[in-house]
Image 1 (spheres, rainbow, N blue to C red):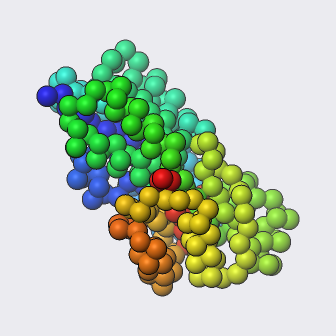
Image 2 (cartoon, rainbow, N blue to C red):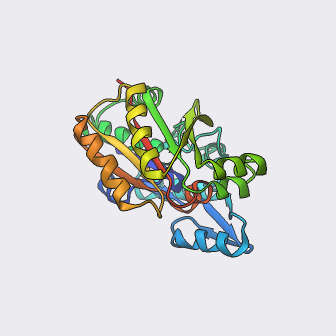
Length: 283
């Protein structure tokens, strides 16, 4: 029986219990602070926040590099002869991780590459679907597996609301004038991942507690999500009361399983503390 092994990178923010359950290999992306390169996951997210508080700059982030992919692919193949590696990557339109994985796998014929066109919990949800398909159909042909994964990619719907607009401003993704206006009127943008790109599609006004409830209700009305599971993304700093509030609403609406995805250093660098997001699959 062929053995499938899934590989991704830390920008997927795959919960460690799910990574362990499905034996998924997660390669670290990078966070640079004070000219020191840290592997995502090797330091607590609070160090990203501390760095911003100290310097008023956000850390630099970078992709897993081709050599890291090559070493990982070769090691996995050596330890698992005749295995098939399914690489599910961070959106190629948001990072060069996918391209680096292609470079790192040159000459290796046991690797299949899939662009998730997603990040963080959106990517996690796709990876978990892929792992569940493999678990249920271990003899599935690679081409059939890829088609099934691509179907879920086409149905994935993901969005988030940043917790702190200062991080978007510091990263050059928000002008000073826009930041001042948003701060004065307590406005937060809704960022959706559309065709692999991060696009601001709506604005919410008020406290994060009020925004979170309105955001969840409107987003679930906009998309007819499958009720099997719903993913909530969040960064450290989000109030526990808001998490309970959103989970209760989702359960009242009939979602059977709620999966919480905490953002790591790479994603938290851009979303800031207290961000909240939603990911699921449209029926």
